[in-house]
Length: 127
Image (spheres, rainbow, N blue to C red):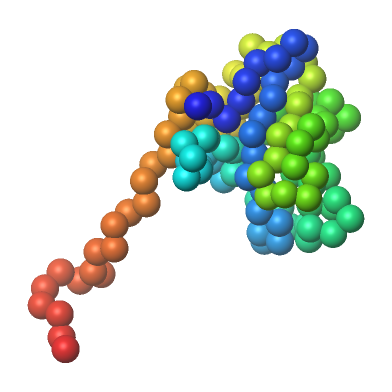
């Protein structure tokens, strides 16, 4: 499953927001336990009175090169998992998303699995 879906007049983006993340930006694609892919977005804003959701919308708008007024929340106002609608040409928006987050370009974007826990130094372990 893709992080986005073309809809009439734009794109629908599935997002996992991380408020109080230390910086504003896109963090790639994550696979949820149920198999859905989401775009990871980190923002500095705290999750109070919709500030984090508004910050996520601004990050998405900047990444896709559209005005923040063209990005609207359609689901997940108080949840970490959110759905946004971005108004514009679906093909152009998909291309902009692919440029901002290359792993989101494919319909079935799969994130890179985390590295396995390997010792920093190979050799015997001391007890």
